[in-house]
Image 1 (tube, each protein chain N blue to C red):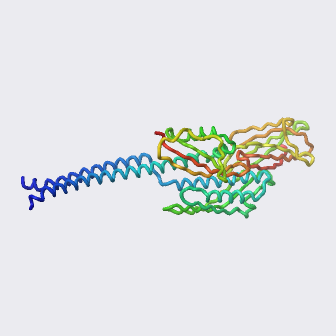
Image 2 (image 1 turned 180 degrees about the vertical axis):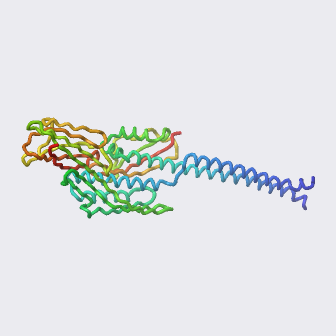
Image 3 (image 1 turned 60 degrees about the vertical axis):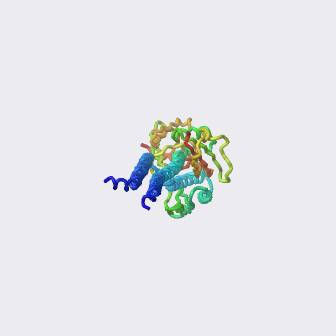
Length: 140
Length: 252
């Protein structure tokens, strides 16, 4: 009886061993997924901080008020790290698009795109609120 | 010994597999932690967004004060803040951000504004509001109370020397934003002659020297009969906030 079951037990043991190794791979894969999520959050935080930096001295609203989309694109290019692709759209309070030119530095090639919504007010005597939609991706 | 080996070889396989699994998992975990440390992963951007809201409430006060000091309605601050709060709550950001505000109506402030332009040697334009920002975002709710005070202060002092019937006037004008020295966008100088205010210009040899640190020296010449000369400076700071300041000049 013992000799007859020996082969089956070996198979079960081998199966268990394979199962253990595969579970290690499964845990590792999950860690990679959460790392991707962290990268996405980092990209969103980077976008928000960049907009805040440009807005801190009133430059961002000044460029929007004057409709200087070229300078706004150049400012974003300088403020964001190289290798980050962006696309910015400026809306007024009625969610009508304000920018008449595309504010972007290229097309998105990756699936992982972060979205940042930012509220920017104007320092001009005529008060205006702008809603900014910034999309960020990492160039592949 | 041989018998033991033969019986335990399957268990040894499991133990070896377990060791390999632990090795794989720990290596991946180590690499993950290392990369997390390197890139400095932080929490979601709730704190940054709160800072952005604070920054923009400040800008709203600057806008309202620039409007009011240039002759706008004194309800402009309440209207602007109401608009800002409405747009803020309609945003599609993660979480809900609710902003409530109270404009100051005491200590010389009315509807959040105070223009103090009639005191000799110092003039100021101020806006003040208290805010409560409630941020609801899983897993944390934050209630933040803060006050924003925007003040442009201008000081003016001076004297004159007589050259025949002509007075050579020298004024020192200092501009401050929230008590920090700041630059002016434009300074216009007036002097009083026979009860009316006259703008000093090139015909008065007007020279304004900018020291780049918020201090300006103003020199001009006038021909008036009175011993005491009343002067006034109308100043726009870089934010577009207007402030007027008067001074009395006597012979140096």
